[in-house]
Length: 132
Length: 449
Image 1 (cartoon, one colour):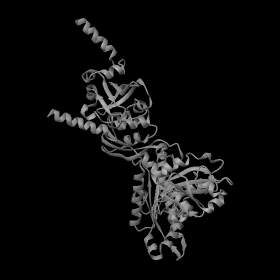
Image 2 (spheres, chains in turn yellow, orange):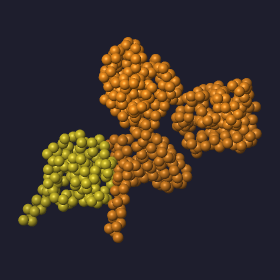
Image 3 (tube, helix red, strand yellow):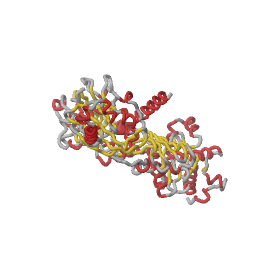
Image 4 (cartoon, one colour):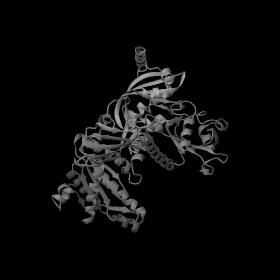
């Protein structure tokens, strides 16, 4: 029982890592499961309004979910990604699964991160994963 | 208590995250300590996909002076520069209205800490450029008032009014023009124009008017070149120019050009020179001064400025009228221009104030000033009110390592000029004349004529 559980957990760890987790799987997670992920997760609707802002990202950025949810992410919180490298790609490309190196201004400190851009034709929500 | 503090911190974060102005905090080497998202976005414009976090390195190419300004700023704290313009990318199209320009204000907080704000002023710069062009264009239009054609366009951009003179000149039938887009009847070779009439009308709607800077061949017969100005028409506007049946839409002014090369030179002259005296104008002077300043700093060569002001000019105006005042200004400008020749940039800076920028040391510039002073004092200026004698006062300054800005060079020359005025006018003042030889009369050293 115990060993099975830990095996399960390990399997989950492998497929829910920053680089491995699929957008389908991510989109199906409950909010407490999202919060438990060790990397930042931002989910946007087609208009760019924030629908998901997990607690890891909230801690990294130093702003509570309540401030960010429902607002235009690239215009108000993440202007530094409002360019052709990130925001524009979500507009231009039908499907994305790409990891790029980037510098964010988390709590106004220049912070090198890895970004994973996820967009699928079958899922309306777009995801941005942030790993410090 | 902590909850309050947390909420306040979160609110402060949000304030900085959404700030529409770039904020950067960095050390004397340019290493960024704090930066908000707007500033990061602007940095990405300068160097896309960069992972570099050094503000001087990032601006090395387009704004290398930021490093110099910061590192040569001697006071322990204060404003290093204010609204310094950084031309990030040049424009591509005619008129370069798509150039990217930032304005940077930098503060030194301590020997270890600097703060800078970045603002994107590309739009303002484009507007300034447009205004400058419009000013030139309108004045050249007025100057040769017979030499243009006016078409009236309806709201969709089709011609709804045309003058007989235009039809006569072009040989086009009225029915070939009315109801058509202005792009459709110009004949062969119309292709050089950048945007079609639709784009031009869009811009005119946005700004109230638009000058099509590209060149456009409009005439079938003689293939003349035209500049096109579109102005959004309001009812009752410039009625005199329009055929009576014109309705609300646009006015399209076509200005035929006799020759491209000739006109570019003339446009440049109008942009750079004062219309009354023919001396360089203030705008050009500042442009040239910034350029010379950069060069002098880079090559470590001398740069001096002479400021001169006609003595008691107001009295001339009051006694003889402004017409005579203008004649005096023209005469003074031509005397100075003949003296300076190509050794410096001679410009009219204000009403009766002129400046000469020279790549020489202070002593040489004082000699030049003295030659101008002498030449002015020796000349009887022939005017409508008879011969008039005037004098002028001069202040000279030289760029020093401590200065490094045009502002301080101008201030120094201005201070010397006022000293010359205070000490009795008709004289040259500079740090040389005060510190070493209070009664220096450079005329004795220099005057060879």
